[in-house]
Image (cartoon, rainbow, N blue to C red; front, side, top):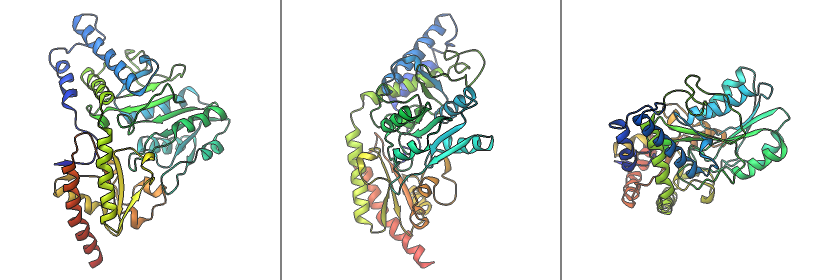
Length: 383
């Protein structure tokens, strides 16, 4: 199997599994217990907290709170701020956010909040000037992603944060789920108040993530109960998963293969665009403005779902967009927001590479596409 869908999820790294194993077998204590087993579990949780903080450049490990993943972190960041600040119910976000933010904001509109949706251009890029114009005295929170999950386009977080700081009293929440582990992040240098992480995007297990809460930002508890996680998220910590997240962060800090991944992505992208006249890139043409592993390409006149299924039958895993709506009909909300025509958007395929891909994977995929795209386009013309 060739796996080119790493933005949907990643395999658990063997080193991560090895780190988790003792906490599924011998070291099974409750980290809130005072005995030796409990103390060992607590020590493991706190080490993982430090490992997460180091990867994203948090100033203090206590700014990291473990969650079940990116969706929970996003919901807590936005919903928690609104709960704590009921008079500041104006939210600013973008039209290309992940469903965990976009659908939440649509729900909040139904219960009395006002949302300003910042648009992107055909390249999927955001104009910081539009954010400046959208800020109001009652703006409470601005929520933007660091990297788009479908196109890989990076938003200028430092500039957006500066706009928020200089022109409002709002706080900035960043959905960092797709960026962590793929690009360098230093929250000590970014004007970010809340930052969401999901472990399964960079080789830890599913079901664990974190929310960075900058010192001085007051969020109410997301889960109320026994007071775990410094009283901010109750419930017995999932020690094996948390250990896995910490080890995955350590691996990401040590990883030196980003240029190799970028090179494989560039080769795949270049050859597709040169080999197929009907191929068109979705997202910023400048690769410096995209994640190093992501390429979203449309095959105009083809049905992306058909191409994806035929690649699947050839043992190659790709996606037509976000895994969260992979079963939905029609073009993705991200491509619609980018004003990509239906004829082009309907033929889109997202290729997202990872640390385990090889040059052989790329060559095999290109060979398969040569047959599949020609067959799919011919079939469409014959209808």
